[in-house]
Length: 245
Image (cartoon, rainbow, N blue to C red; front, top):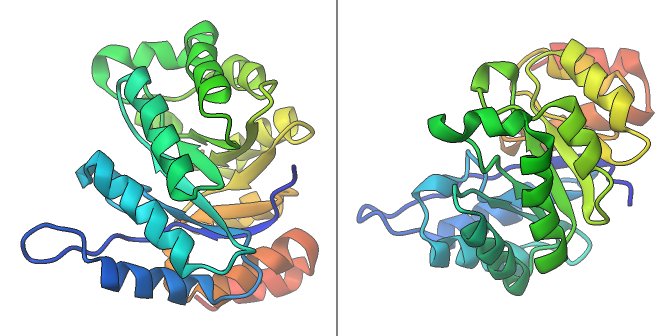
């Protein structure tokens, strides 16, 4: 399963009482999804306020995205929890709501658990449960080194063997770290570039298949053009588009 092109990560608008503004959300997702060259659209990410949403709201956001997008575009739903059982349930909820793929945030992104992110057995057990019990394509979310909850390369190689682990949002922070992960895993999964900063271009030009970035919800077509040129077109044109932002 090869993933090519841009995946924008959308925002979630709220009403003044703190509830989700589903009308504005649907309009936002439809506008982002109207760009050409997209693989899909990601909801319930960091920019989508996943940590501020209830389980029901997360499910409803996925359903709204599926309704707002054309059938050929994939809906990628973010999962974030410190409980494995809850993570599995969220995955099942997203699947029921119409998600085509899951973007799984590190279960260990909390201080007492962070050391487990480098424990290959612990990481594998999480993704094995999701693989078996949710049975939906999975994109792993790899944080930059400064985040603390960073998977070891050994752990990434192990989970890449699972049938449903098909991609990675490699938010490594630098082209050098991206290249290390890409070169180790690109023949098994799609290692997507992910950086809301100038170093994104360097990642894309290292034979990236595509990108998953939040900043691309603003001027989506231009970001899609950048990804297209950098990954399968002209590096020079990609540089020109990049420098025009």
